[in-house]
Length: 433
Image 1 (cartoon, rainbow, N blue to C red):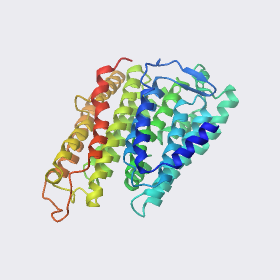
Image 2: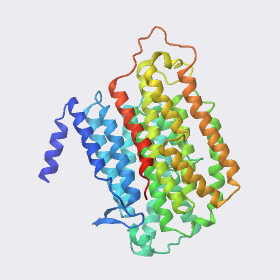
Image 3: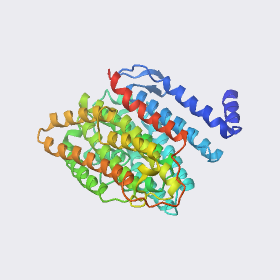
């Protein structure tokens, strides 16, 4: 207890220069999780916390993203740092939780912290409406989920994932759909994605990085645990979920091509990538689940990097509109390479982790239904088109800001972006699962 109090006193007494120390601590802690884990078996079981391969890589991603966030929090107040540290604690307990009830409460607490971060450090007055959208969409499904959790406890006498996965759990169809929807909203699935788009547009850059790279993965991780618990109930509604996701992929990809706000394009592309990840994981095959895990990691790094790039432009031009931020290759030439790398990785270009994850996901989907091949060709095509659209319309064209002194970004910006790109390029050389 004394050690915890000393740590809190140390955090509260930190000045701006010590953010670098805290950031380095996050990167060092991420190295603790670079060990091989079993795919199915839980290890390090003590109390209600444990870890396996899924949670191992997602905790690694969490520490890596927060390390880059702490590098860039210099101008924000100490309460922002404390809120981020609390969020790290909540998310780590969430990923390591073996208890369904603890998982539920830790996720809701994390959501509450994101709600306050958008309210406090959002960009415009619409942040209030956006944060309430976030709470409304998630709570309308989360509150009945609490009832279903206690119903599972009443039926099986346990809420531990390890035991629930060994049992042949069954609920009535309506309750199972509602339980599944409570996680599909958090990913989010098409038709329930409105809260994510609004939250991203109004959130600050670090809130967007946390939301895109970690919060969406909490919902994906919860859905994965749900798939393992109810192994035989998903087959009845698999075709219906696939149909919605395929339709959503086309609609959202077309919507990306008619947007003028850079953040809107990235937010909609996040829903598209989460949709293809969800389709692969619903197959309940190892290749689809492996592709889904790799998609979580790669999408977390790419979307976080894209939101950070938008912030570097927004801090100098005070606008996120594409037709205002044109000709950036002349004003910020060194940053153009970073834009190109992030945009092509967003489309799944080699050599990146995105390419490997999409190959695994497409193979599992074609194994389920060979006629999906035609639809997946168009998915890959649209993904490439809106990624290049985002890059080309920003970097080329007539320069709008001729009288503003736009500098070629700071060294910290390049360091942060390189830390985003390194895992995407290097992780594909050690894919031994």
